[in-house]
Image (cartoon, rainbow, N blue to C red):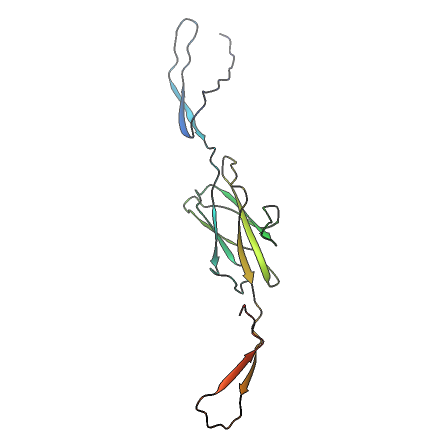
Length: 178
């Protein structure tokens, strides 16, 4: 009895898992046992992550390493967080972090690398699942780092002593971000 091999391609399969079985027969009609070959999963759906500031949850803030939360995950994605300097940047900017989502979470908190100087930062994320489907570049979420304390100029208006029962204080040099 000679041995040979063959390759068989299935019909077009729908999205999702498919259990595959095989059975062989020879020229005279003898059939092998029907055997389970394995489960083949068709996955053509791209991930659709969401982006939010987590800690601090609002901007502006003074944190040098804000935490960005990526949500709407299945738990199989590899995530890359990018830091850009403008609203029109994309996922080719500086990589600030790369992580793999945990299988038991629908979100992942990613701590950014140190931002350095005060300013406006734009974060983008790309998620790639196990089938190599890409979300594309999602974002930006904007974070304004402001670690500079206010430096107001304060002065008492009017003279003292006074017969007035209220005092007036003038505050100058206000920063609208403070």
